Image (cartoon, rainbow, N blue to C red):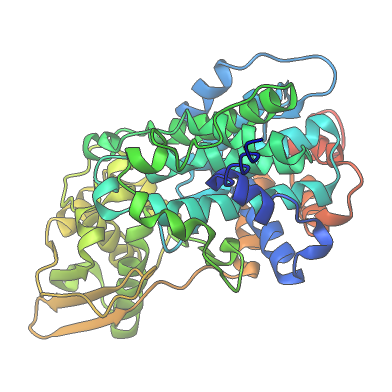
Length: 462
């Protein structure tokens, strides 16, 4: 009798499920849970930051109200199917441009993973613990997958968050639903079929990248629900002969997906102070500090030299001296952003809202990118910058930083209340922040839904 064939080796998705898909709340360190709660608050702040953005309105127009257990559209009095709610909320949060960022890969896990998980948590009445487990798992998948797939060459064409966001959102959603191992693997594999998104929007100054994130969140929910209903998919969707790694030329880096790490990927996530591209943050902070220390005003400036990494300089939309055609142009342009903080004397969200200001655009035209040779030393995952401001009366001031300083927990809480108060009402925003601050104790995440809608004018806010 021939010996029985050995069982096949687990594929990459199956190994990710075994490593990260089974962890319950009691296996997560307190600082990991705290970081996940903070990320939730930051995503909700983004949902409220630009309530009148036309892209969010377009996303909402595609959704239909449902009766019974649905999921909320943040800042609207609507109950939607979970996939629709995930889409609308992901788009809304992405429009803020303050999305949390996985520093080593410049991907945005929060706006893909959290809308997907929270939509299912609200609609299904999942516990806060289950939601947090899903969020941490989704961030883990996104960070690890991005480290394998994303390279400077890839992001000159593809949107990194669009490539890895669907898989991460589905992984997180399936973990939150507490599907069996096979169900989690099927959800992640199904969602990987929808990986995509190009970066031409950054060259054109348009803003459809927010829909890429919406697609990722929506497809993550749909994939998790398909898997729950029994749909299956190829387990080699990442590392198979015709999988994502081969498509992206990442086979040689595939082993990195399961590399040992001391801390979860969510701890590599930073929170941007400026409502702009990740690569804009360090130049903005350095320029703001140098200008403030020297008491420099825009009229004092002859020219500005900004040195950044080659990755930052070549990222679509970042090397753009103007004039700005749209707010999207301004949020990507290193030149405009540096000019904006010098003109404002600080990092002010209002500066990007005035993207067509003639004086700021004139100053942006005098900002020269990468004029002084190599940037300050760059370590993996860092975004270095050097800024030199030449003055009209002669002389110059300069400064540098190896990376930007992420917002603190107190900063994020304040930003949430500032953004959510006018949309949800101050009382609801305060109560919502309190519930998110103890999310792991909630027996039913549906309790969040009423607080995510604006109060009726005739009634006292809840």
